[in-house]
Length: 113
Length: 110
Figure 1 (cartoon, rainbow over the protein chains, first blue to last red):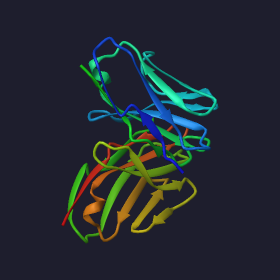
Figure 2 (cartoon, rainbow over the protein chains, first blue to last red):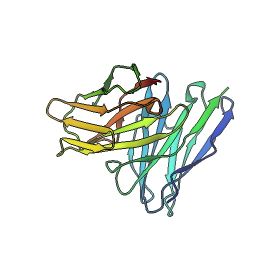
Figure 3 (cartoon, helix red, strand yellow):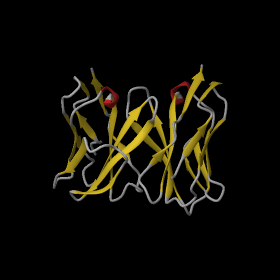
């Protein structure tokens, strides 16, 4: 069974631009969660989607948004990029809830210049 | 607000040694606790998941215990190998999605 895939793997953007990251969960998994990982803050929860509905949202500004499609694939968007948005963005999928075993993708490394 | 702490932040051991990584959490109302491994620049690999009703889980050379009442979990690694070198993270889920500790960076020296 294929694992969680994330595209692109690396991105370089400049301040003020926007970016869209994509995540394809493991087949059959309906819950997708997004996390931001930085050296200073560690791993922080962004949002969780289940059946195209946002089930939970972390403490991030409205510039961070996401969505889930009917095939469970998910995208997250960051608008008006800031230098502090430079991070590894990780997507995780699980069967039903984030309380089930989570399987992580390799991440997208975003660098904002 | 749930907070997860991992001690030590870094650990270096010679190959073959048994070792224990510690994780503590402030709110004992959790559904489960998960241990993950992260290699540099990579995503997370799930190692063990312990439900709140369980006391421990084992997988190969790994054994994780959970004491919910005291807010503690340990990950025991037997007969460590250089390939075990990575950052180990614990995370709990309760009324909120996963809350992670900052990890323990383990180096196993051949």
